[in-house]
Image (cartoon, rainbow, N blue to C red; front, top):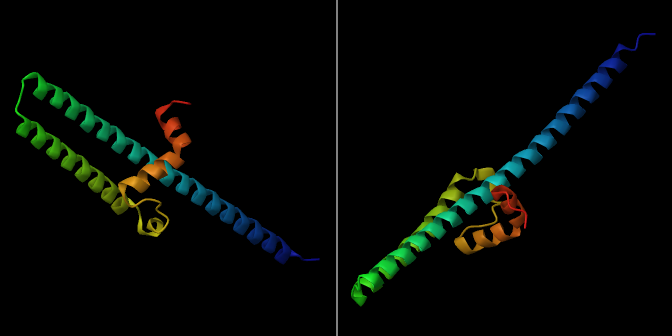
Length: 134
């Protein structure tokens, strides 16, 4: 009895099943990598923003120390606030622009405040990234 067609069907079924599971696994890993990349990018932006604030604080202390007039202090404060807001806008704009078009509809943030909510909701992953387990 010649049942070569049964062997061919079993092979095709096995091959298709293997490719399907491989595709699903690859898709899952890709989405996890995309999420991890977003979290890492937002963490770097927050750290850069902390540096902006720290340098601004040091500069304010220096201006106090040399007894600079209030107009210069106010001008510095205004410029620092503008730079920080510009940094926030540009960093989120770049994150959205760097996201592939197919994933942009699932992007959970489009401005700084929603990005910080996204980062807070992925707090465990952020802590793993920095190597702290709190």
